[in-house]
Amino acid sequence: MTHPSHPSAYPQQPPGEPHTVPFPVQQQWVPAGQGQYPPADVRHTPPPGTGAAVPAPAKEQAAAPQGGGRDRYLDLLRAVALVRVVVFHLFGWAWLTILFPSMGVMFALAGSLMARSLARPAWSVLRGRLRRLLPPMWAFAALVVPMMFVMGLKPVREEGIWWFLKLGCYILPVGSPPFPWESGSEGGFLEQSWAEQAAGPLWYIRAYLWFVLASPLLLKAFRRLPWATMLAPIGLTAVIGTGLVTVPGSTGEALVDFGTFGSCWILGFAHNDGLLQRIPRYVSVSSAAVIMAFGLWWASGHLTDEGWNLDEIPLAQATWSLGFCAILLQYAPSWKELPGRLAGFDSPITLANNRAVTIYLWHNMLLMATMPIIDQLWNIPWFGDHLGTYIDASYDVLVLILIWPLIGVMIVAVGWVEDVAAKRRPRLWPNGEPRRTGKRAAGRRAPEPEPARPPGPRPR
Image 1 (cartoon, rainbow, N blue to C red):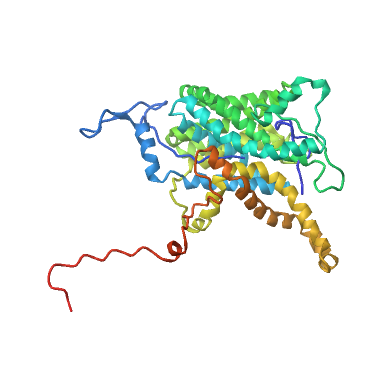
Image 2: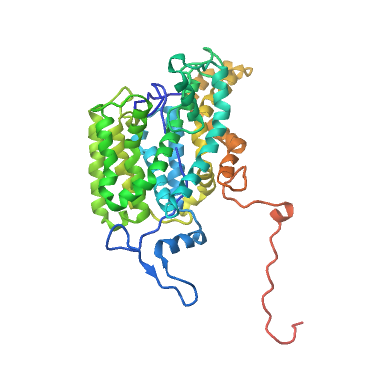
């Protein structure tokens, strides 16, 4: 399994761990004020007896659940992003970061949802986001952190109480939590870098938390100065993500992440508020192409040992992701159902969206767990002796095949925590298919009502 190296843009991930996550489903409403921005508070006169006039966005949000609730196009993007994350962390192909910048897409979708949610009081929204985000992480930490201590994690005496405060980031991920760079023994069940790889995805949780906490202020700034607010994170990345100014420690890492993906998050605001739809497509697409071209040009002059891996080049990642997401959202259809052949993937796409946090948090650990399982093939009589060469040649492919059943097992084992966090009834396999309540319900359909018979004598 290939593990690309990690730049300063991603916290607590030294060379050897890639990154990528995230998430909730959103809906889009187009503001009523088409001639100005921010949207005008246009009011609709209700029918007599229905009460006072209601702002247009509020009415649209109230009606949203009746229309199905989920935008299947955005669900598709989220599912593709998760699959790309898993494949990239297995094979380490740098060109995947250009083909589909998963993290930029994830943050753009999450930003759009956050903007829609902030139609409600900000404090209740922040409290709800924390409640949905933290319990899945606590379930992850409940297994991983004890394993780290058993296999060699010890307090750093020179850091004193500060080390224990950083350990608290496994509970509230405002910073980068500590972990041993190497643990266990060579040739053991787990790789010696297992802890570093297991903690790798936590950078996303921390970045997501920062964006959530900053969103009330960011949204106000965006609706006052939309373009300046959207491009400001690019400017921040140009200063601290290129080495022009260096901010040490986990604070610097968090700021680089914030700058790298901040414009994508705020682009989600623009999508939610309908700003992108008011721009002619030829203007938005050509502007996005220029920004993306700059990103590739910058990357060409700042290649690392990973080559064209944009995860290692913050400014290139920021500009390429912004342009890429702008095009995806500019052409975004509103799908209540997946069209054509995509409808055949409805069940796994729904499952991936309902368990996005679980899949992201655990996939690195599960990738490592596939290796000891595959290694057992050599212990099967005749099989290892005669097919060992083929096993070596197709090892990564075998990992790719095995990872999905293991992810399924983890979804059943701990995925229900996401439902509990969201105050929903726990479900083991939320793929959108209706529940069967028994053999009779599964095998028999309700009798159809008899059609009305015209009056007159019953025919014989």
